[in-house]
Length: 245
Image (cartoon, rainbow, N blue to C red):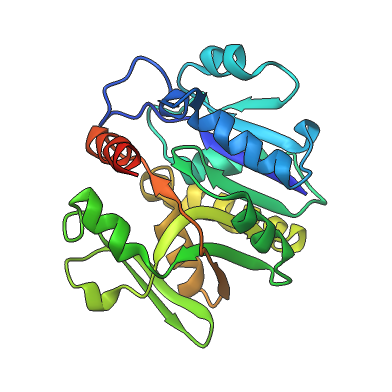
């Protein structure tokens, strides 16, 4: 198994001069917290690939060179799905776990995801409303995610109707080696036929596209604390909650 950590973006909403994954919580960066969770699941540095872009040198400086780094040179004009497929184009024969780098999560959730026997499984928080209410973003930053018969049947569209949301996409997904090879071909074809859309498509909307093409997206629930950092409001809210705890 290989783990792809997506950390190519600039984090424009933070207006940082460094990658967002290098934000510090306590004494550790988001990236170091992520690596500790992977280490807890016996994932070795040789199996971790950093999908970089913006200021890759700062990431290398922080965590060292015992990992693999693959840079998306077009990070300014593309999105995370493009970054992901750019990273795995020469990776084959491995199940792959994809994780965002601007989230904190629990090591046990990774363990449960890895144990999934399905070809396509993502982590979902069915109790997401509490977190988003504390952020003050319950209606401002909500996306559809509908579940039926233990599968996700749609996701990724902005909504202010909470009834459209059965859970929150966390940003960590496991895909089997067999399915990965198929998805490479699908993405390559779509990128050629519709580059304007597929250079910029984000992960949830790409997954929704796959669902529409009859791919089965299963999920495992997170029962642990996790948090997503999209902007300074998220960061300040998280720090305030920790200080109250």
